[in-house]
Length: 476
Ligand code: BG6
Image (tube, rainbow, N blue to C red; front, top):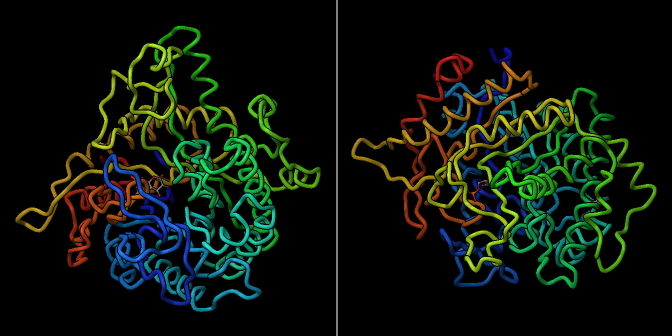
């Protein structure tokens, strides 16, 4: 049995739903200069907002204006919590003003009050892929140590203002995404840095991550001082990485590949760099800027829980595709398809058991509570003649994953706080900027070409999830 009070709910991010990108005094964020892409067509980052380009995050799904009605729908499903984020540029439009923007703070007052009034606990990420653009222009984003103090100040303002309504926090969304320095949107959204333009992309990535670790750990310590009841977690993208075969070289390669997650969780959960870190830093063009004071900060602000997203698993083969003249869809030539799994239309391999694997792995490594703060499947969908969507595929996907999280809790003894389904009301996709990649229990009538009424419609999964919550996961 899952514990009473298990936090069932959904997850969103401010920039993917709010829209109103220039209302309420909000400044531009890094997400506001990312164009719409498509399946296999990457999003572009433009120098400022360029006339004639399409920027889906400018409108999102208009949640800034519709949140009251949307929260009614979440309450109808029986959500116990809603994970969302605070747009940093609503609170500090330029990132470094002396005073926060009261209108931005008031918006989140209204949103959190509305959630609490419906018995829905807000779960909040401070930085979900959208720092103020001005911080990139003035400081070079997280390349600069100055960002640490600016982030901690932003965190302080949020903790002080909302601590009476928000108990669960996370600092940086999927902080380990930027480990992939080949695709600029990851470094851009995590850190405001285009690693491909840096002389030494890996050094730039490790340095930006370090400043974020320090900022995160200082924020955790601060939250505890402000209100000892607050729980602050890290947030990582937890893709399980398997060896392609039992060849010992595949097994060793997979173990090392998991450092793309563990490097980050080790620092944030244990408060110090792991002993294998210097091996990962070998070959950097110059040493990283890590001070003794930083190391003390890391040690004093370890996280209260591990928040993570889980969508898929991956496989590595010690024989690189390039060595055998094969082309690969992955940026890592050692990454190959798993012949035992099928993928969705975007090539994300569906693997419910990988979720149990991750839960067990984190549990055995850190012995901390965990929170699955994103899981879900993107599907191309359309309304049928009954004004609904028959999304049995989503129900099957979620059922299979919930079965595995239950096994992790009931059989493996994992301490799990909750489960929030990503994109509970169709948001703008992060990686592609599409509306067509839909995740929700609620369909939003908005199309990639900008047409649509923006009206909301319950999908078949809406009632299914309501029953899951009602029975605390007993009936799937
Ligand atoms: C995670 C992010 O990477 O996955 C979300 O935290 C994102 O912001 C989600 O939307 C799904 O990715 P996508 O690209 O399908 O929207």
